[in-house]
Image 1 (cartoon, rainbow, N blue to C red):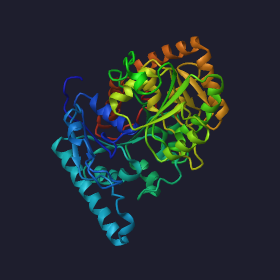
Image 2: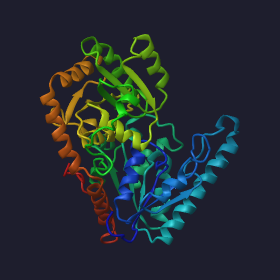
Image 3: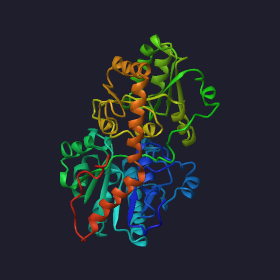
Image 4: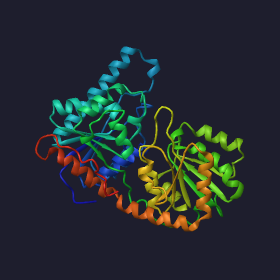
Length: 421
């Protein structure tokens, strides 16, 4: 970490560890790499279950930045069906008021100049009191699905355009997301900054797998194909499993490990059983940070053949591609969403049509049969990951925030904050 700086930015989001997922990793790493210039506010309870997050105290004690907690930042879904409309509305308003009071208190106590909202649909309403009552600049951080999905199902879903229009600047993670902001959302191009995701090169780097790792995961003597992410349709694990039926006909030594949890798990389990892939595909479920690094070390190839869904849901960037590259692995990505910003075909990986099972299988087989190509992609991936270190991304983010307050007025955001990518 750098020398401790005076806090000047507050990051507000429901997505901070111990919550898992790409956006949680992004916010955590930007804060951690800021040298104290960014403080954060996150919930202590899960809005889905209403229960406290396990491991909050342990995480916060070692986070590496000041992390405030409040009960909830968005209304809880727990028991929603049993509540009346009046009770639900009263409860939602109470959560929102508590969130505003907490944010305002931190802004004043830390003398915050810029507030970054990490939840467009559920937290965008904070822009109005922050700008008009507290006189602070506000940045909205957008990943993809919150603007590409036709209906996010949130309380303020229909207000997304208004929130974006009110914000002083909008940070997005890919050129694809930028186009979605300008097109469907009607955001002003002058206030949008593209800041590609980064990677923690201290955590993810080239290393030899643990001596007993292959045996523990049941892949001793096998060529390992790894996929990591939430088990949801847009990630493409279902088509990846189907592709394994083709791959194993000529390369029975290949074994697919899938790390992650989600609604698609039962579908994946059914596919594995019905297609007789029990000896070639393993669902690992959720894994720890330590296990994830171990899995990248164990893998020969990483694959996540993402695709765009009919409702517009798609990958905003794909943090896992950079993680795999940082560990020296060639990657296979879908030609959808912002994944093409993370993976350049023939440079640090291969891109495929995520809806084409045969095409996915062909890419896997190509990497298996062309070791020179694998090595070339791995080398380029390592170089890309080195230039995408979170310390660089955090510096770029802070420069954007500082530009907004340089002369006490709205400044145009740079359109390519991540040009070094």
